[in-house]
Image 1 (cartoon, helix red, strand yellow):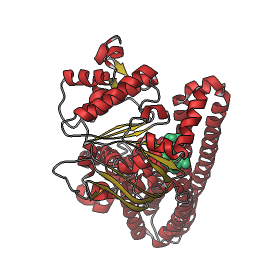
Image 2 (tube, protein in one colour):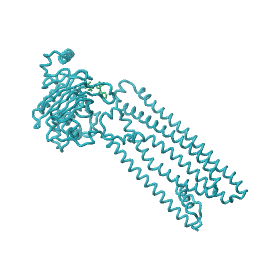
Image 3 (cartoon, protein in one colour):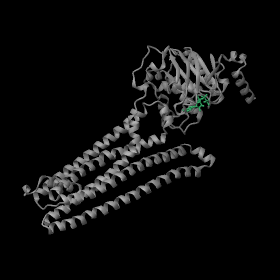
Length: 550
Ligand SMILES: Nc1ncnc2c1ncn2[C@@H]1O[C@H](COP(=O)(O)OP(=O)(O)OP(=O)(O)O)[C@@H](O)[C@H]1O
């Protein structure tokens, strides 16, 4: 019986039956068993495709996060919004998985089935086959237009979703500000604007899908009408038999159904491609220069810092010069304060020293070696940094203090650092002491700063950078912490260079040297006494603050 069935005939039948969950056209028992087997193999292959797709998804997400995002300069995040990136990591990566797991698999299966059906149709009757091919070509053209539309629509959908996520994330993280200013409705409208855009685009997508379905149905039935018309004429003229016509109608149905499936999966593929474009772009990013090459590890970091004629603009606002020809030097073990009006570039100096950004011009030398040539990980391990608004991670206090410490530390050391930062008392008063789970919202600004200072002290860094690190502390804590910083500097076995940025000028009077910044330039350098005698910008700032407190 099997010998009566041609191989392409059988292959096409098996693929068709695999796809349609066991629709059988033959009553032969052996054939049924074979069809079941091929159906099982096809389903197994599909499962494999999904498994591979999921594996690729996880790898892609990891690559995107580690390979691209973690290895980009900080300037990358100035231009990309966090909401956008998290949305890319979630939905876009899933789209990529869908392409590999489903669409590509179905497209290749239907191409195979359609080709088999077409070859068989050409054998049966080429004029009839050509008429079906014409209809399929019309369907393919509509499919291409529709696919292109879906690609654009998917890109917009992803963009609007990312914007909506961004607004939601921002509103929820700033919920206190929203509450206090009573802007709940305003924020809701802002979110709703993006939802409306999403709704609009999905409505258009549905309409486009309706048009695509309509054209398919019309063309599908046209094939049958044409087959009956031309086929009937051919039977009457004796060119084909009734059996051949039946086979023809059956196979032309396969062909057009395959074209439909290819079209349907093609549009879905285009949707995925549209949505994944940004993911692929992110994955294609080369790692930043500072991570791609092995840098120099000095025997010991002494802590001599030199800025030579450094100029800088932030990449996101490259036309605005933030630092202009800044030259300064910080000696090992020196305490240097950087002061100046808001926006004068103080934090930018620190950002460049931490190599979060690269200078546009000039050079930064650390122990006489250009910063760019040092191994960035090695260098950062020897730096303690407390930023303007220290944020805590959602973990217990001990882990927050230990965070990023390059060596193993004991609980005693953690408590020692907390005591140095005057954080120990408030920590032990918390319900679970050092095991208390905290996040950014649970502690006061001053408490968070003290934990961040403890974290920096625990590292025993060669260079300690405090950017407005005591701004949220009360007068007593600030006085104590200042004493600790000075003591830690003097008492450090390895020596410690300290750079302090402060607005409260009373806190930096005892610094060895004070650098006064004005509009991205170094305006004055000297000790507190020298600068007061100079009667320049620093003296004016000190006087203004004294007047304000008077
Ligand atoms: N990521 C950024 N992208 C673009 N411009 C920035 C960025 N960060 C800071 N700037 C701009 O650079 C200038 C200097 O900022 P910087 O934070 O260094 O000033 P600052 O002296 O530390 O101010 P403050 O005392 O208020 O902290 C400002 O005009 C600021 O708007």
